[in-house]
Image (cartoon, rainbow, N blue to C red; front, side, top):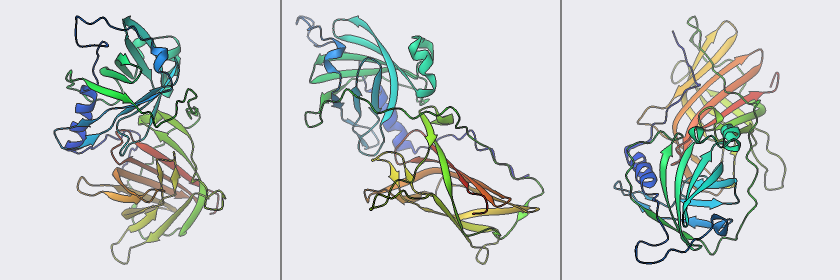
Length: 346
């Protein structure tokens, strides 16, 4: 039976990147304002670092260099980036508890768990982070709890993070997009379906929703392809080219432009070797990247990005195309899921 259940995808991060994540998380270390026990510590309040952006620097055993960043906007919102050289900001809700002079425990929550943050249920925190404030120009942090990435085997190696004086102070975080009505889907290919040439149209216009993190734990909402150089909205478009003349039951699919953030806007890219099946009058599409294959896409800034662990499933029924893609862009440890739906008869 050709059956695809797309709701539970697991990241296939290369060993080097995975070790980088381990080292980074392990390297976020709890510290008081001084390592000299004889020096009296200054009791910095956490509010004194609100709005400032701090960078660290980690070189993992794999050779990968990561530049983590953190900003606490206020007493309830923060942004964290595993590495500004290749990853995207992740937005969290949080609350803090003061442990001692200039030392705090921060409880971070993804958007889906904001209610637990408001009730201060620490058992439901996505991440638990220890924070030491050496000065308003320098902090040190340590991850002591991770219920989000699943990375284990942490070691207590500290990393210092320095205030970026060239980044303007900002105490107004952007809204976290989280639409409870957006849900993931599963497309199953029936046992009776057979390999087939693509019999649908070559172009479909429509719209899509997106999710970041498994099940949309970090964000989910209505997607956009952004605007063109003239400021006009770009219509999300899927193109499908039948390649059965080369390999029976295959097609090349080009997915819509995905404009998530300024740093994560991915231009349309092609997926070759997509399997095509037909059952009655319904067509199905299926693709799962092998461990050896990586699709490369271009970002809006002209740089390239690897589309890792890519899967695609689709269904064309009564003239309506539904297409689901899931992938890990670049070094990002969380999946992005796009669910495209065409207009009727497009």
